[in-house]
Each structure stands twice: as C-alpha cells, then as structure tokens.
Image (cartoon, rainbow, N blue to C red; front, top):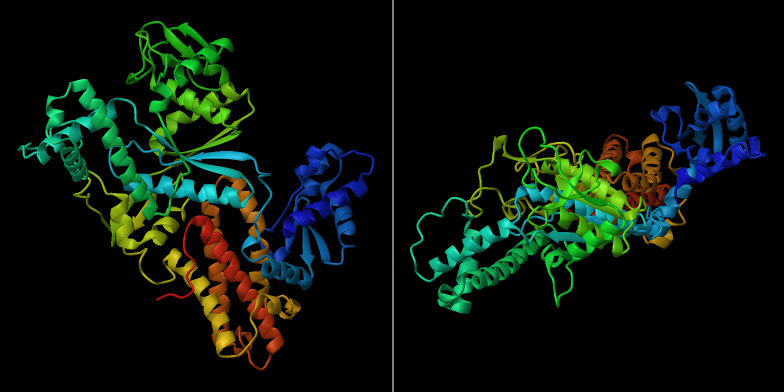
Length: 587
C-alpha cells in the first residue's frame, strides 16, 4: 500500500474528469505528483498538479487547483482540499486513512513498502573493486557499505540486482605485489631481508603468503625461470589477497555474487582473440574508433598520453571532454581499453543499468564511463556513478593513527573489530555519499540519543519490549491476527497520528531513494521514525492515558500495540536494507 501513489491516481483521475477530451497527455500527468506538505500543519498530502498544468492549459493555477480540490473532496477520505501559495493543493484526510495504513503494515509485515518500481529490470552494482594488493582499508569501507546498501534497496524496490567486484589483477601493481611476496618468501626460508625496499608493499599481511609459498615449494622457486616464477607467485598471491579481502568484507556482511577478473579480458586461448581484441574489432565495425593523435593535455601528462598516432575511442561524440586512447603506438592496450571491454561484457550479460560506486579520487572517470555507456549500448543502457568522499577517523576528537599490520593505512578489520559491524554500516550511510564523513570511535559506541545507530536500534528494541510486556505482563493477545482487528481510529493523539503518517511515507521513501540511488535516505528516515517513537514514549511518562499499554482500556491498547508493532516492522525492514541488525533488546 502506497498512500501517495493512490492519491496521485485520484489526482490524475480528477484532471481527466476536468479535461475529458485528451488535452492533458500522459507525460504531463506523470509530472503531477502527491507528496507530504513541507509543513504538516498545512495538511496530510500535497499535489503540484495545478502548477504543472497551468501553463500548457493556459489556466490560472489557483483557479485550477480549486476545481481539482472540489472533485477530490468528493472522496470519502478527503476532509478538505485547500489551495496554498501559487497553486499547491493541500489535502486533509480522515483518521481512517491511517487505520488503513496500519492495517496494511500489520498484514504485510516485512513486505510493507516492498515495491514493483524496478519491474525486475536487471541492474549491475559494482562496488569496492579494490586492487588485490592488501587488506581492505577504511577508505574502501564507505564504498563497500554504500554499494551493498544500494543493492539491497534496489532489490527491495523490485529490481533484479547483481552485486559485482572487478578484480584489478592485471598491470604493474600486481607485479609489485608478486615481488613483495617473493621477498617474504625469502624471509620465510630464513634469509635476512632487512628493511622493505622502497616501491614494494611493506605490510605484515604478506608474511603468511611468503610462509605458504615456502611450505608449498620449499626453495625451488629460487632456481625457477624468472618469468615463470613471477606468474606462479602472482597467481598464488592474488588468490591469497582475494581470500583476505573476502574475509574483510564478510566482517561487514558484504558478499558479492560476481568476482570479475581483469586478467580474463586480456587472455588469448587457443589462438582466439581476447575480450579486448573482440571489443576493439566491434568498435571498429561501428566506427567508434579511429587512428589519430591527441593534443598534449594541460598540466601533468597522464600515463596513456603519447605524441604519436594511436587508436582512439570517439568519446567526445558521447559527452566526454576528450577522445580516449585504447591502443598505444607500440600495440599495447591502455587501462581504458580494459574498462571498455568490461562494460561491453556487462551489456552482453543483459544489464541495461550499470551502477559504479567509486572513490572520490575517481571523479575524472565519470564522463568517460557515461560516454562508454552511450556508445556501446546506442543509448539503451544507463550508467550511474556514485562517488564516495573520504572518511576521517577520530577517537574522542583526536585523529586515529595508522595500523601496524597494514604498514601505511588503517584497515577495515581494525575498525569493525573495535566498534562492531552495525555502527560502521549505519554511520557510513548517515551522511550522503558525496559529503566527507568524520567517524569517531567513541561517539558511535556510546549509548545515547546522540548516537544515531543506537537510537534507531533502541527504537526497535523498545517496540519489541512493549510487545513482550503486553503479552507476558498484561496478558494481551499480540498476534498479528489480533492486531489486524484493532480499531485504529481510536488513535486520536497527534503523536500517534504523526507516527502513522511517517509509516505511510515508507513506501514512497523506498521508491524515491531507489530512483535517486541514495540509500542514505533510508538511514535518515529510520532516525526520524525512531525519534518520533521515543517522543511518544516520553509523553506517556507524563500523561498515563497516552501509555502504549493501559489495562483499563484494552481496545485503545490493542490499537496502540498495532502501531508499535508496525513501527518495529518498518524499522526492521529499513535496517535490513542498510545491513544493520534489528535487536530484540539492548544490553
């Protein structure tokens, strides 16, 4: 049940009643929306219909709003329709509407708010995709949480979602990783390696890799051909690093369904072209590449720039700032060539929407990815890029020092093991992804209303406590079947109606957050809902007649229990989308 969608249909029906001869087309009707008014004192719902239609219909917006209001007031649930400002129409509804909402929540439980918005459309969400050169650091943490929560949100909104990790296991950084592991291998054989040379990875996390190589191969790697040894060690080390990365992500309850290896894009088997070769051939056939030169860019020259003729992708024709090199003059492929082949692979796997969760330092990739999407799909597929800003760690206001284990950064594991998964996930989503985030270890673990994750989880636990108390101490029937029979019109207090109205907004919030690809909206909503619940609880301390359980008024108590139960269900659903537990009690 989505009260906003319902009344949007009522508004569109009223428009068609006013203009039965087709003066208003479907595109205009779609722009007529129903949403909460900016000030709840103005009503329960508001529509922009008159403002949208006034100019194309050459009508006065306020006069048009009055005509629409007169039609809408014929509905049994509409108490009044009032024109405001330049032509907004505010609707006041009967209490029975909130009863319908609460009945729907009780009846649908965890499925309340689940949407068909996505229509089972296939969506690929790629996130984390860190180089397999060490453990996850705190910089990866935010992207991991944002991507995972967005995937869950889209799934809840009816999309067919694939969670994907792109393994950057080709290129110079992997050779550096293999040579770093070989150094630890020699150390495991008893050699004194001294200080780690500049340019190699210094972290202790490679010590077990070196030990595993020594156990498997003894000292035989030392006499092996250098190229063969490097490839063998590279494969073993990448596997070990990916095991480490998967374990780190599992601490956050992040699990990808697809791990796509960059190496597979370069591989040529049985004299067959590689995926990059095939991509380039396809783009040539579609006149999307050409042989040419690029002017030197301003500032620092990028690695793939050459003052020679090379194979270029026509990126500018699709919105990019410059055409992009795919193949260098020496015949080798650029990093961008692998990116294009990878995108083509996703498109060929049936994805019409590709979402990339990237670090803020990848801002320069946005236009080129969007250009690739338009070119490869002929405009059929959409590319969405969300950039995650930096996370700064503090402990009681002081910056946190680096991790000894990693060598030069703070690991994701360090953070999760100190404060727990739930605070990390919730707080990573309690600011918009493109805003910097300060994460204070002390603040996210204190049990107070100033700690958002505690406040929301405590809201759910408080609801469950009320339900247990009603059943065990007051002997009330609290089954969903009993709650569904409650007379919700007995909820006459303003705070109770406010809670019901907030629950009514949940389906709309799911759709809008999914459309905007902004899971932080769920965190904000949950915090506001929990705050409203706690406020109503506190009112009962001073006004006994407003307490959730009143043994002298069993009918009102049943309605209030239905309200509390409904709040707990929505809190649990929202927390599940964020990947955060909904505890039955707080200890």
